[in-house]
Picture 1 (cartoon, rainbow, N blue to C red):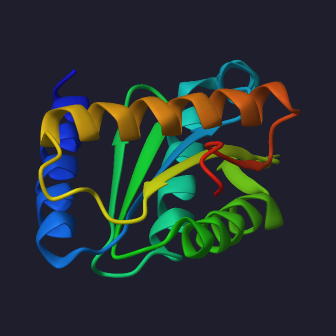
Picture 2 (cartoon, rainbow, N blue to C red):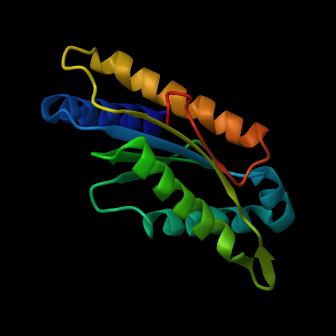
Length: 165
């Protein structure tokens, strides 16, 4: 979709900058756990409210230089320029905790416990001659795979791509 394309474009920009400055880049992919149940249990208004609240809690943790974007139904990406995977994991844990900490008021008298699963990938410093499109694809694929592992491992958790992160 459009949002994924614009995320891809932002990724390429940040990777180009990282190449110039020899700086790290990390990417978080998040999605709301069992979102279908949230929707079914509280109606679509509740689902929308849950999405808005999760977005607000993500925004509450990231810095101005970070880009948080929603795409797909209940998926979010957080692009973290100048951030090592170690720092990104700490941020991801803070986001995870902020979402899980308090229930979301989905509708009058309906409060939902919402959790997110987060996948993390990053480059220490992309090679100066690396193909930006290929690097962006790789980062997305690695963060997606880590997100899938977080789901498989029981949700409400952060998993990092296996590159020593």
